[in-house]
Amino acid sequence: MDRRRIVGLTPTLIADAGLELVEGAEPFGVNAIARKLGVRPSSLYKHVSGLDDIVELMRGRLVERYRTLPADQPWDAFVEDVVRRQRRMYADHPALLPFLIGKTITSPTVIDAYDDLAVALQSGGFPDDEILTLVGMIDAFALGFGLELASPEQVWQPEAPTQLFGKLLAGSQSGPERVERSFELALDVLLVALRDRLPSRDQE
Amino acid sequence: MDRRRIVGLTPTLIADAGLELVEGAEPFGVNAIARKLGVRPSSLYKHVSGLDDIVELMRGRLVERYRTLPADQPWDAFVEDVVRRQRRMYADHPALLPFLIGKTITSPTVIDAYDDLAVALQSGGFPDDEILTLVGMIDAFALGFGLELASPEQVWQPEAPTQLFGKLLAGSQSGPERVERSFELALDVLLVALRDRLPSRDQE
Image (cartoon, rainbow over all chains, first blue to last red; front, top):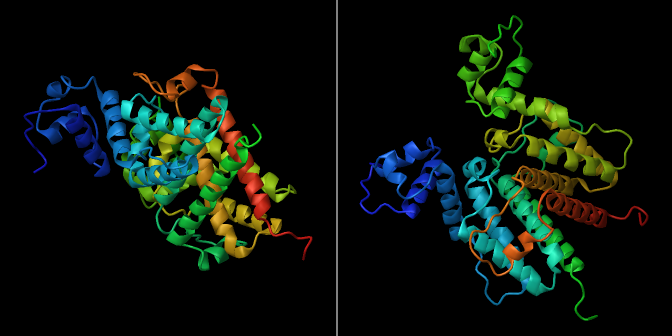
């Protein structure tokens, strides 16, 4: 049923087939994608240069779905939305991480999304020489909390007595609300820290 | 050369063989571990119940290497050390993540390490009903910055003009120092936020 004959093969169709494979925990690679699309691997190479190219296209397709488009919102509302959506993106696709991490990002869509974030921070008043540092911080933040969200409902299950941890886990703090509280608290801390760090414009 | 005949097979030896496979980007599974140890898969099942069990043992071995042992340090020095070491652990083993994430943690060593963190936060004065939230936040934090550290030296490479991002990347902010600055800034923000959140003892 998955074997479809694609007449008009495009890089986008190839990337989407790759995403479907990874999301379905199926074997992933050029041959697997070709099989899924019902074409020969050699046909794929007319549209992409290889697996790295496909992974970059997949990254682009994914970011397209989750990116925050700049509107007239203030810089901090933009950052907050970026963090929330990126977190959701990672939480929804933990299986993709091994392919994405460790690879230089070249996808124009993804670079565009980072460009928007850099511009938002600049327009908020952050100095140019600090923006990449903040972008990296926002990135790591969304990634960490996204993976935390991808954890099973029961993150910890002690099988022997503990000094305190087991008692806390047996209490009402456990479960999905705890994960949300950790994230909301951290997001608040991040935004407060960014606002505090902003050079005051009134004094200029 | 890797095929060794193990006379005294133990869960620890099995876990370490698994770690070596994943770290070497080799195929990973019960059969691969058995092959690496030069034994039959059925021999492994005398010591472990299956792949989930092995992954949990691997998690324990890894945390053993990187965990912070409680000494007489203040709670914030303990938290800082936990974050720094956990970040390093994730950065050194990104290939292990797909196996670790999404699985309930049962390893006694790992539960012990979390128990130490919970006790440190409690002894610092944090109320019991907030500790798991903070533990989750510290966890996500170390994970996100660990994976950021596992990124290639050149994280972004725009192939088309950008509004601002390309100019920033061409500047002096790029490279490993930027990654360290992002982390140090974020760690500082985290610790300040935790200290601010602490109920004042002087007023008791």
